[in-house]
Image 1 (tube, helix red, strand yellow):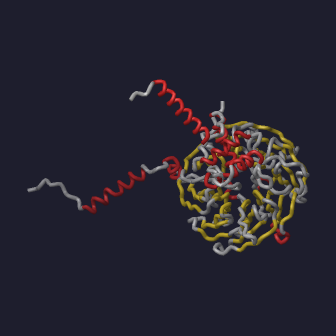
Image 2 (cartoon, helix red, strand yellow):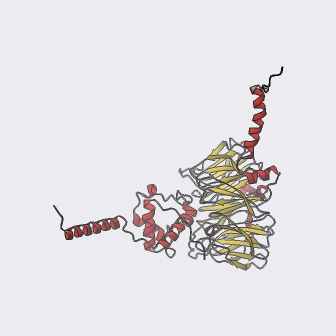
Image 3 (tube, rainbow over the protein chains, first blue to last red):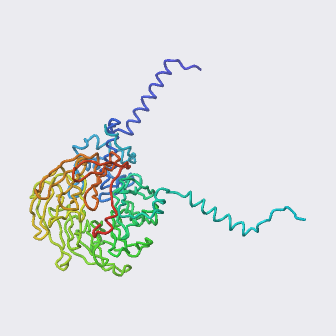
Length: 123
Length: 408
């Protein structure tokens, strides 16, 4: 039995659309540009790292590894990044990162945070 | 009639000839040629230093006279926030890693002499006045641990658990006379002094401190201990010549009720803050350096600076104070003139200036530029760079001249 060519194309198109939608649902937070992502990863590893550790295994601040964060709702983690935690040394980062970037950072933390590639060389 | 058979050597004799040759050949091709050769040339260690390559678990051994890297030593674990103290003879560096690793590095052989993982999460350490004990301060599980400086054998532990069961992170550890160590408890807000004159059975005294101490210093003469407080406007100060009086607050209310600015990195305190009868201290949540008289302990001035100060370090002659800043202003360095009590120079040495270390006489300062992968050497008189060294994500710079100073 031969599948008519048009039907084949439609089926392939639907399959592709479904795959894409699925991928977006799994990773629903919009990603920043590659350049900004590299910067954000560097900030989290190095500068958040001054309290949370380069490996995010904790220090003055708590560990930010996926196993530790697993039972914490993402919204409250985003709120902590954006607004800080009064009464603790955790400062608000709004202004340094946007709320959307904070959401992206939290999504990465929950999955296991990427390695730092450093900043691009200075001009 | 002579037979022409050559004489045969008995095996033991043959080995006696061959073995020394093999040993000589093998030793000639061992690793670390540069520094071993240097050691063979009987060099001193007084001008050596250690630079932390924080992201790679590696340290560089540097020659501050030649301004060059002599060797690197790998395998030191997680070196975020690593710090170093030196043995009394300045031959060995004790490197304290974030992952609880304590590594003793032989500066002349450029190799690890001993290494232990002593806790889950550590923040630094100190060495006793007699050089026999290395004490580490821990975040997790808290407390301090004392090790034999020779072998790194664990001798004793003091758990910082208070009456309500709270385990406190330990900050601001410093060495005092008589093999005593002083430190602060972040959660409990107390200052403790542990006496290790019997190293396996330390005795500990407790004092009130202040809310959320983040780091502390002891003056070079061992008399004053000052703990910076995150949780209140002020610092806790103890006169150790009058320990019975406990601690008192200095610079109370320096923020005068103003809403604090965000602190993106905690300042670091060491004896370098004291010069000419004054202490130069970073404010918390204010972009200021606070100046206090060390007789009256009253504020005598404050200097507005670029951002949240992290290191506020007196040049060893006390004529200037060099200040670096928290993220996102960590590309700046400012110099304060101590006579005029104002900023005299504003510099941009590089990206991510994490640490500064003066040569002991103050003629040069070395600055780590983390995000440029460089260490800059500056002439402190001209404020101009002399040269730079390549270093991967450098943080702390530690010269062996610290070996002779209390509180370092």
